[in-house]
Amino acid sequence: MNTKAGIKQKRFWVIILTVLIFFAGAFLGFATVFRVDEVVVEVSAISEDAKTEAQDIRARLKKCYEDENIFVINDKGAKSIVADYPHFRIKGFRKDYPNRIVLTVTEDAEVYAVKQAGKEEYLILGADGTILAIRETPLNRLDGNANVVIEGLSVSGKKGEKVNGDNRLNVVLEFCNQLSEKLNGIRNNVLTVKIFDNAPQLHIYTQEGVKIYVAFPEQFTTQKADKIAEKYLALSDEERLSGCILSTDKGNEIYVEYQQKDISE
Image: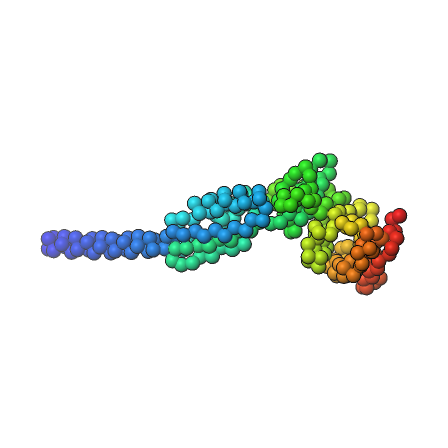
């Protein structure tokens, strides 16, 4: 009886061992088939400085994902790496089974420059208010021309983070981004945007010379930007050299007019 019991016990463990070996082999085969062996990194870099950074990003992303199981990876590793490069954003993360992933990374364009209070340096911002760089001049790293300078705010922040310290910036960005959309790029037309503590106004100084005065920009923000852009585009080349565009509210109505003489003169 003991002999038979022993034989049964041995058979039991042989079966268990066989099953374990089978599943181990299946797992290893599964892991091999679905191991990432191709990492495609599509990087859109528009400035010369960004092209060097793009090479680093591409190399680090490939190292991060190669030989990993495609079922368990996600974009967290990619976001952690790209966070070291404030000008760049992850725009796409796609798995092409069984063993290929495609990442899309793009460079954020510099648009605005906000001078920090009490400091001889500017926070260089993307359109969404992310701090892309901190430098002593407002110049854009792509073309060397100035970004749109925003004056009158007390703000702070670190590279790769959103600006903080003054909520009025949100209104300015909303207005300017809408204006930029209508003008096919705000940097082609606007030099400076000034904000005032003692009055709810924006003063906008254009490349050509005509000034734009916006009363209560926090009200009907995008609608005002649309109407002002329409008025600006309707001006003749001569009219754009001087005078001003005024935007005022009357109840729920927005009035925009051009005056040949600047009201500040």
